[in-house]
Every structure is written in structure tokens, then in C-alpha cells.
Image (tube, rainbow, N blue to C red; front, side, top):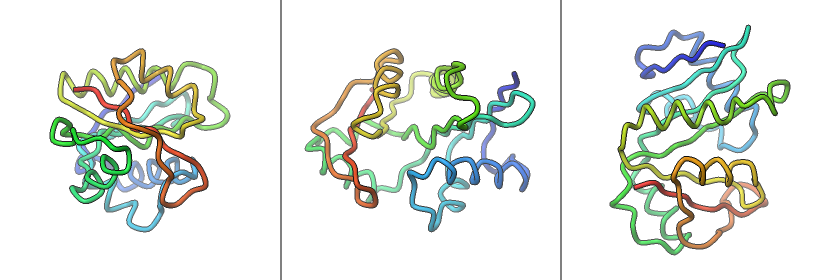
Length: 158
């Protein structure tokens, strides 16, 4: 297994395409403008096991997006959180092998004590468990996704 942690500006075009394709494969992001959002991230994480099987990021959230997420969840603590943990995705063939935990551990180490928030589907029990293991707490109440037919839960780690 190989873990690669890079700033987007240090990634090759092939790595950016790979990251973007895996995030898109997850089906839970708005694809319009995804490449630009990836390039504005703080850190990208790639996990390879023969081929890239998982990705995740420490994102620099847009101020309007961040305000909207915290408002929808009924939480007024947005100033406490500098970064957003996001785009965590483990390919279908690699699920159940601990890559999600490795992603979370790698990102937690890369954050090195900096504050972070994240969202996940209300029914994503595996992510709720991982967030709890890595010191994240639920913030506010579940809220309806703007682009999908499910509710989201906001988590934070000060």
C-alpha cells in the first residue's frame, strides 16, 4: 500500500484527473467546477494498492458555502473551523479493507491539530463511526442536501 499526500499544485495532470474521476465516481458532489475546487484544496490524499483505490482531501471551503452549511445545520460556530475534510472516497472494489480508516488517519495527521468540519449523509453509518473515532462531534441538526435526495449531518473537530 502506498499513501501519497500532496498539495494540488504539486500534483501532475494525471494525478488531478485520477482524483477528480474517483470523486466523481462517488456520485455525491456537484461536478460543475469540481476541478477548480480540487485545485483550491489544501491537501490531497491518494491511497494506492496496485492502483489508486481511495482519495480524500483537506479543503479550503468557500466562505459562502461554509456559512450556508452551518446555517442549515442550525450551528453558529463556523468561525471555529478553518478547513473542511471532504471528497473521501474508497472505490467499490476496495471497500471493507480499512482504507477509509487509513484515509481518516492520514488526514488527521496532516491537519496536525487544525480545526476542521465535514458533512456526510445521515444514513452513512460507517462515516459516523469514523468521525467519532477521530474526535469529530455532530454539530446542529440534519439538513436536506441541495443537490441530492438525502439529508446531511455536519461534524466538527475544533
